[in-house]
Image 1 (spheres, rainbow, N blue to C red):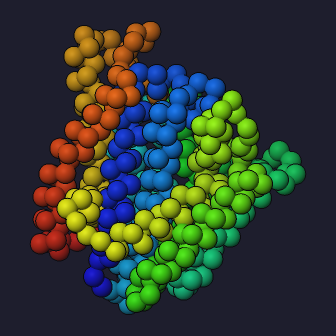
Image 2 (image 1 turned 60 degrees about the vertical axis):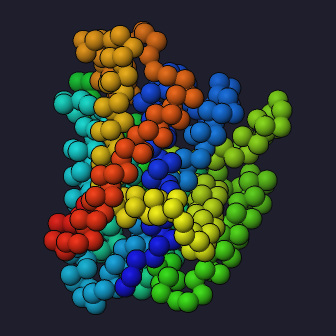
Length: 383
């Protein structure tokens, strides 16, 4: 069936905003030592620069599930579809720990293994392939059930042991030292993000019906309203909000929901806004939406090259600031930034660099999108 323009537009939007967060991570002067959502040290500008990027990963994963449903409708062969999803999942896991991992760290020794969105998406596709014989609605319900299980797990009195370790691995983020200067940063728990993928697959059938626009608006409104109610009551998140020193910091506390792992409140807010954006994207098309749609049609291609563009820009920035290659350190969470030396730029420059990189990346993405639309080679389905 035909592509849904709104899906590509919204996916393109979050891909563009995602780059802002990664540029801030690598290049913002205080990013190596300060948490942008720590209300004790952050500023409103830094907090909201981070906050708006919270919408990226859940939208990306959710729409991957929706797109998988729509794509698989072209073939009624369940066995072939299952094989494709499993192979694609394995391919994504491989990319995460090779191409993506090197792009993030520029460490040829791969001392830091970062398990994040691409690997989580890969495992999600594998699980989706294994459950493909079930209806999309059933798979969507499984996704909701997984989110509920994750929400109630911290409330259960589970003793330390193998069961707690297994549940912790499946649903919660962790840092695992591997010895000899190596570590695993387990940022995106497998089942937490599989839940979002399953929910996206579950609503895929909506887009085959004529009234899907009204469903999007209604669902988004319900999700956002439910978020505000639960947040006011401090139900469904690991970080309760509280009154702060002034109104803006109180608002920041209220919005400071937990992403690692994605909690019920986090999902209600981010996915609720996503539904509303999908509704808006389906109502109008203009020059801006066409640009966003270009990025949204080639999300994996964009994701892979954007890391190298950002990290390459950081290296150039460090050279301009007078550092030599010998002063650059590429161990965990340094990205090449020198030790005990001021490096990076202020937040204003982060936005300038973001706009510049995204503008440059538009052109290879447009070329690849055109090539992909004109060629049906099998390998294009994997990139």
